[in-house]
Length: 241
Image 1 (tube, rainbow, N blue to C red):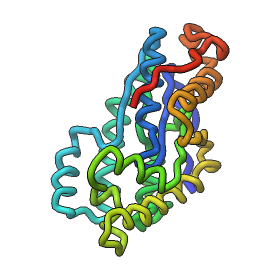
Image 2: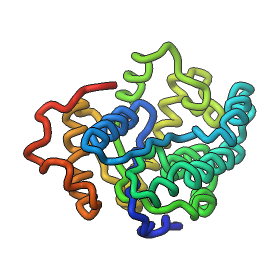
Image 3: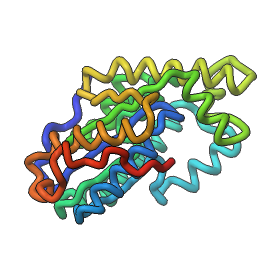
């Protein structure tokens, strides 16, 4: 299997959050950004499928349910390349902390779950730099579904993987497809040294653990001294969704 490039040798730091839909990773990423910013550490937040270069194309194709697994994969790779070039590398060169809500690992998990060759996908993303920290927020399919259906009325077509499963019911298709994605994430944990977090724990408990990992992993980052040591962390960090 292809590996991501080793240490990027830029003064900034790259923190990645990953997990299946409904894992709560975005909440943890936003809380982490607020916490770092509160100590004057310059941060940038970037998310999956946000590049203006392909966003409108992807949205239009999704609306028509016109994406094949390979086309879907290539569109997301283009999005990722644009984000890496313009939203991730420049801030890293400037010494900032970049927090990425999804990274290449999302493609490795989702594209393979759609039947795209795993090695081919890894080769497509061979230009990706290795993050300084990669969090994997793990939840079961049942917990994921409960959270998503509690927040909105329906599961989306591609979110449920209805383009590649034989299930006509979105919920059953979701269980099938996201189960495949979850399996891929679990398999990648050791391969890419993902920091696995139990995403069923309360938000504040998870955030406290996230902060401990960040303080330890980024101890060589010049501005990390602005942050208190572990025992000075708030007992109950701000809870937000």
